Length: 207
Image (cartoon, rainbow, N blue to C red; front, side):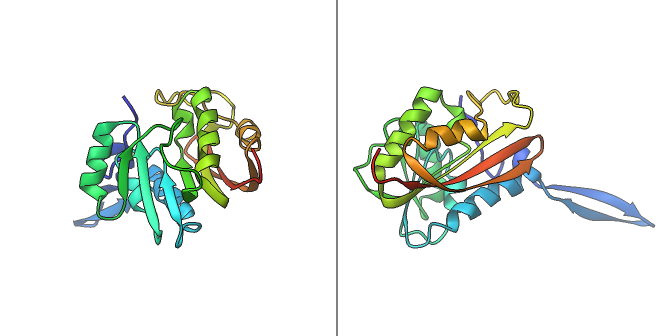
């Protein structure tokens, strides 16, 4: 069973609660750190996506993909057929969704300008992750960008998330990426007990 994120996911909902001041109770709003982080990563991708052909993988139920703005073409793929069915039902008006695998993207060479993989590579075996980077290189056009984010704990211990097969340190993921891409920039964002690394990678001349 894959980890699924939708606007209805309890862990990603904002919280409202009542405070009592004087005689009249009033409602206060408490933002959700995970929801904020979720929106942040798709806003990050949108900075690079204007007028571009964009592939989002894995896309799950499509909520995140639908937040990527101003693309020329937007496609999300996921290995789970039920997730793709729901993505098309919910967000088929803003993106196309297809069943596909990270180790076999199923598109022709140089089909996309941007490939986004946002907190997805830690959900698959390392061998699949390496194949995904090869596939991303193949489907990206010249000077295309791979935008990838992945979380880890500061201690290096596994976070305990049962859906995370392998959590990469920044250096470990950078070493894998540099076999195919040049790294334009790396940034970091702390979310709860995790540090999320954000890599902007450019398709190198050869691989």
